[in-house]
Length: 433
Image 1 (cartoon, one colour):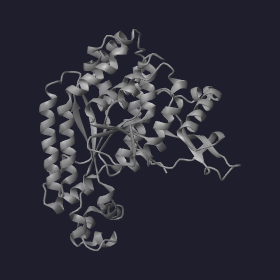
Image 2 (image 1 turned 60 degrees about the vertical axis):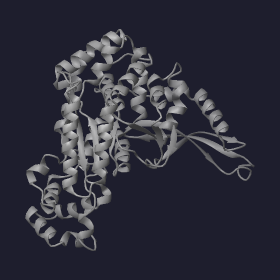
Image 3 (image 1 turned 180 degrees about the horizontal axis):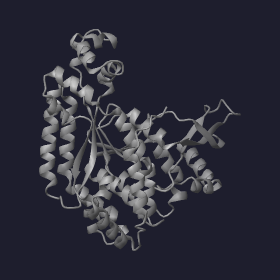
Image 4 (image 1 turned 45 degrees about the horizontal axis):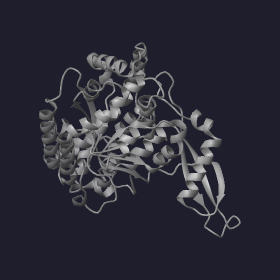
């Protein structure tokens, strides 16, 4: 796994350590599958098979390394499947969270060996603390906080702390909305699929909803660019994209939980053409300089995708949300939203026609705005509602999981899941400060 600063390739998925934890807990044989597991499994399978590249935050990667032996002493099949891929990276630059020091010791030298010894000592001393902070998604009991562990050093060799440096292990506490907000603020100018656990779904949808391009902006830009409004409106904001019944395909091919990683890898190879399609689309979208070019790219992508998906679609096919965002680097978000906040649509058009918006936003000329890229983000999030709304999908998955894991799923918890998702879908977005 490579560690580098934030550079994201086309068709990339960022995967949360919490999602991997929940999958390995069940697929690794440490616990039984639940309704919540089914949702998390869908999120991972669809992202793993259809994404070309994967990233984990450096903070999550450190957390995984520190807690692995305590939480998963018999191995982590899904994590191992992921990190064996050549296109997986750990990336730094995701926020600067306040960390509480929970372990400190003097060391002769700030190096990997000292770090490994510190982790071993910390895990032995505080194994119960680590276990108590392990979380699993629960529709009936929302997760209020998430704790992660990280490793660091202080001091310079041979000149502090009595000629000794110190090795530290920190514990960071975040609420789910803080995790998602930090993530999406960091990847503002990138096309990214998010594979996060179900307990963050409200926060995911909230952040994407706030960032998705507004109808007023899209209409205005389309007018300026000479496009038909009805044509543009087909592509603004969130959209639904059909995807094959990937989880059903995976489960139909496995006899037991131990075979899941192997089958996932095989099916991912079968969907190489799908991933190539996504990469080509994102590249075209990012390199386009006008709305017309970008709308044409979206049309071609949809056409190609619909042909490919017919090979696999059946009554258990699902849909995922795709969100077209205004890129922060385009400056349209500030230039136009500031006017929308204070004036009517009629006044907005007057301002734009006169180049008045450019002046208000501090730009020298309208020409410097209109040529910039606009829709260079195309984020996706798994549409969990389609699992519940399409009964063949959830019914077939429950039966397959019961067979593969030799267990029984509590179907009554489907009502709790429906209530949880209904609230997300109907309650207005909450704005977090």
